[in-house]
Image (cartoon, rainbow, N blue to C red; front, side, top):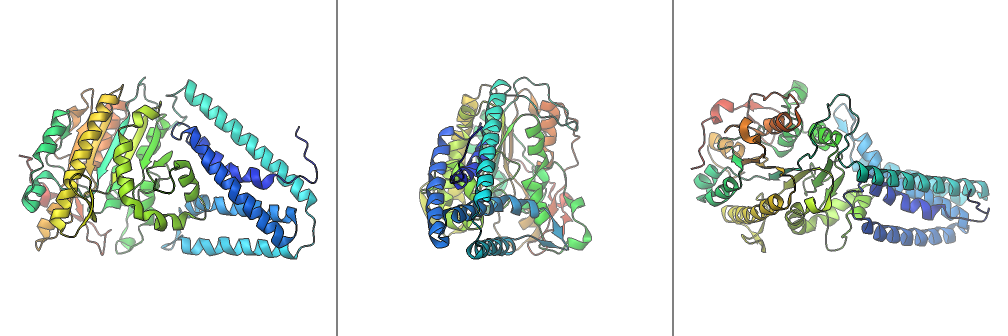
Length: 499
């Protein structure tokens, strides 16, 4: 048993590294162990400096240490508490940072007032805090070691979930779900932009992709499209008449944040990787094991970024680092093709790439620029995306020991305006939808398949799950009333040929 003297004060330093270890233990296969050093050194340095400051202010080392330890609990619990409470909606009210931050600040100020006023010596409290911190450190070390050994010895072991039968495959394929935001259907590119996408489509077909030539998005808006495709269901039944005119989309956002497909794949032993976008819906998916590509010129550690985003600094994170969108997009293209070299377990990748959607930040070869002309800027980014995706596909197919599943899909079509409502619907809802499904997986595909059925087909063919294909429906809603759906399937089901 570790003997700690009554004068020892070590708990702030131990408590400070525990949040880093918690994050690391949850993502052993996805974070390089070397990444743990920088966050730990940084946190220890900051905590030591803050401890010295509070010891001077309170004129007591033990008081200062307890303030720091309580402060660490407040600081690093924020993201978890916010995510937990944000699941609950009461009368249309849902949690925002502006409501929770004052509560946290108020609690800390009350704590500070107490320690300033009290005359207690805190010898016993310090001893208890020391032993609690050591116990927590031991527990985290044991859990991390167990997880590491377990994943090393049983790389494909499935989780126990009696509601989801375990697949019988010995070598499950990696799954790449790549979303190109607002990428227009090739026919729309020709009609509206006078641009031929035939070279890109020909490339996909030459790599054995099935390109659904008459595919549409199930919904006009991105967050609705994701909620539907990632939960393999239509969301209309989640929206009753009382909320059709509301702007409270919170529960639908949560359908992406905690979606069915990622949970199923996680139960099959897959690592879940989300490539963080600047979009709030897909920037930090909770069910994912890790959210990649939030790197920027100042913070290169994914573990440190994750720690920041689970802390009180999370609200400021998006505002401070939003300026690095270009680096984030380039990171996605770079990292996508290298995942099969890093992770020994099967993985499910969700990459929402906010291109060719505006703003128009890239030239056709990836050069940084800002283009105001909508048509020129959009086509420049289409050219750039095509170039990058072709390289990614080649590297993934060539570098995978087991041929993977790859879906390249638009969330919605282009936002190019028109005076004709039917033309707007056609442009916005007609999408690119391409599948690389080895082992005869394309046998169940068809030209008008919509995203709601993508993973129904995959689960049935590769994992023996009997999810029947749903009738392909297309729903339109405007920006003012996004949950007020109009079925436009009959209007848009004229078969659109790629050539």
